[in-house]
Image (cartoon, rainbow over all chains, first blue to last red; front, top):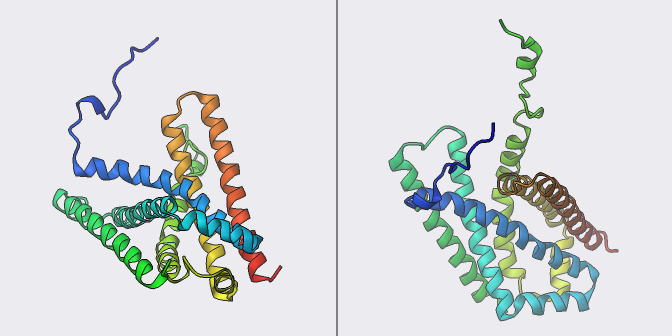
Length: 130
Length: 126
């Protein structure tokens, strides 16, 4: 019997966004972005293995303004996915499912991800000198 | 009356035939990646803008080379598991879904091997 095109859950059109659902979809989006961004890790390592010219090319590409912008986005996505991943691992053990804790751990993830991102870039800009 | 044989419950593999393998591998790689990613990110602070020779020397040191190989293997295994679920969820055309999953798996294996080979070439001085 052919079924009608019924709306599927979640009804995104009438769904009031909350921090919980927004953070959930952000985990997936950051994961996909990181998977694509990890191309840069392979590129950087292959360039280092290929020789000085290839490495210089990679450095100028990644060290330029546009490269740094991409790397900053990558770092932010990385630390968000890392921190929220730890939140997911906590849920896997069966803890933290009551609503106040879900919200508290959510805010903790956002703060921790922001702090780690800023910390790494501050240190890189101070110590890296590039 | 139960038609299920006891072996089904004993194996615990369910209708997907691989039980919780996908879920478990995603968690194992996630746990491994927590220290690896933190180590790599904070190491890169001092090596991101460094000279070619300095970076090669860092990659070639035994502990770093091993950790980089483990990082690459875990990252691409984890990415492959995650991307598979995303593709399964959003691509409803069956042939396209299967084709993109196969392509994605090939690509992640290729990228992982390319990265690992690069680390080994530097570490072994080739």
